[in-house]
Amino acid sequence: MLQLNNIDKVLDFAIDAEQEAFDFYMNLAAKLSNKEMKIIFEGFAKEELGHKVKLIKIKEEGIASSFKNENIADLKMEEYLDNVKPTPDMTYQDALILAMKKEKSAFRLYSSLATIANNEALKNVLLNLAQEEAKHKLRFEVEYDEYVLREN
Image (cartoon, rainbow, N blue to C red; front, top):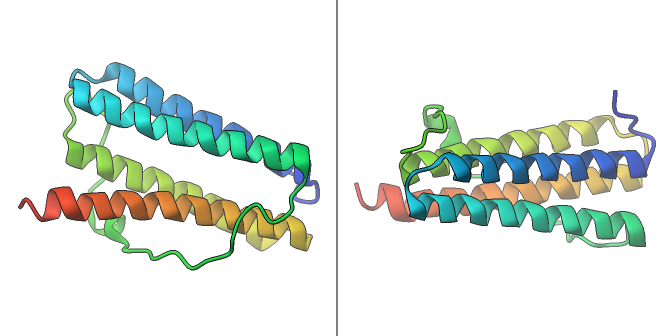
């Protein structure tokens, strides 16, 4: 079980989670037959890799104020959308739904861990990680609104 009294272990956990997200999006991209969808998921993967790099930097240089605490809107779109499974011929709509739900899960994980963290610095790191995931989910929600809902 993750020890929530050791910042390095929590950061290692988060770094591993970002690597897993990168791998997930890259593996999905590799399975897709639609070239545009491949590019979209490869872009998602690159973002996750960027988060991993940021976390490694925080671990190496110290926690400092690498994140700004801000309120991120939650449009809660994923709550009203059916779950989708990745398929080689998935639509852009399905890809956005999959991404929203994945980011929401990551947000919930970090938020839950923050509630049981036993020191303030660690709690702040976890809350800031949750905030980053909320930003990604919001980006996918806005994209869904602009390119799926407005076209229908």
